[in-house]
Length: 260
Ligand SMILES: Nc1ncnc2c1ncn2[C@@H]1O[C@H](COP(=O)(O)OP(=O)(O)O)[C@@H](O)[C@H]1O
Ligand SMILES: [Mg+2]
Image (tube, rainbow, N blue to C red; front, top):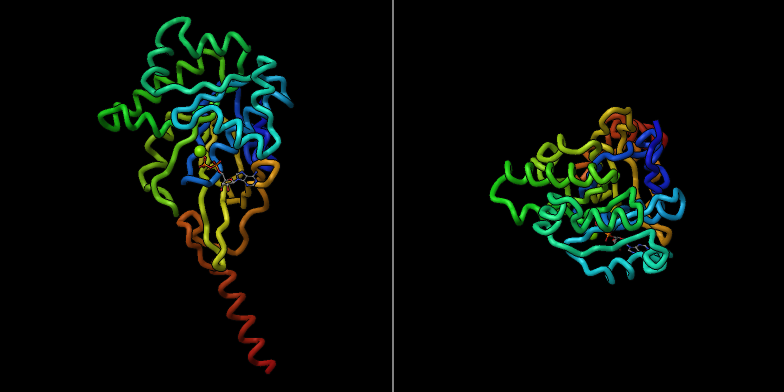
């Protein structure tokens, strides 16, 4: 089966090739972990490397903020819009939801006009604002995601996690069953240095890498690197050396002190 390449070096391998077509894929992380960057990269790569036009749907920033941030990575979004391969759309969750419920709605028109195959929705946290409770949130997101799937789009959803380190404990299972894959981004402090970690929590219908990888935002965009070695409790944000390493360290110290 064909896969939809994310365009993020290292991530496609973790996903055994990429996302499945016409699925909903959720990226969750604290502010600044790189959700928007990763999402723009997914859209930009789709257009420039896979000939798959895309839509960026935003509920928070003006399009010019995306143009500016993307330009920092060398991605020319206005140029792609001029070629009719991209639409950057600013809307509200209420309007987007309503528009998906009627034939020929705003998103359907954009998708048809450029032959869109991908969409970034940044971010679904804004749905939490328009619903009364958890059940209503699931219903809203479910309806929204299905509307986008009906348009034939492969969907990348971002979600802001509340706490800077670790995640809100409920987050992982709150919306997880509504999406086909779930990726977590985390800040991790190691040796007084701030690093970023990425974990593929689930991918429906396929195997995926289960280890926690280092992850960086470079001048070329997001890059997934090697796994974290010798650390324990990474997703809590404050890891400790894993037992084997702690043993090794202690053993090494013992040997060193004997040598003295
Ligand atoms: N051109 C660039 N080169 C390197 N890092 C960048 C560049 N532009 C932004 N960043 C960094 O990438 C991170 C980006 O975050 P962003 O994708 O906006 O996060 P989020 O959407 O999760 O809040 C920030 O920490 C920022 O410092
Ligand atoms: Mg963002």
